[in-house]
Amino acid sequence: DIFNDTFTAIHVDDEELYYQVKDYLQEIAPKKESIVKLYQSKIPIFEKFGIERQIKTSFGRTVSMAK
Image 1 (spheres, rainbow, N blue to C red):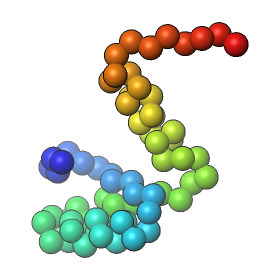
Image 2 (image 1 turned 60 degrees about the vertical axis):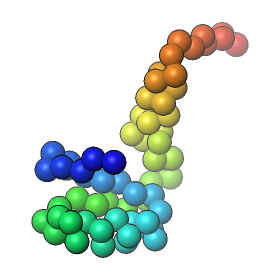
Image 3 (image 1 turned 30 degrees about the vertical axis):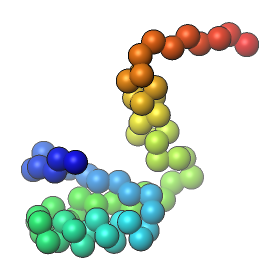
């Protein structure tokens, strides 16, 4: 949504999208193209960067059930 000079990395886990993002940055901010990284770990990208947890907490209170 909002791209500015404070961005230090953009991680993309899809090769086609990776090249699209690089091409787009080449047009709007050529000096920042190198911050685009192709994420290839076996750990899911949302898990690696804690995104799932952030999404869950943004929906409010949750109750964890003990097993």
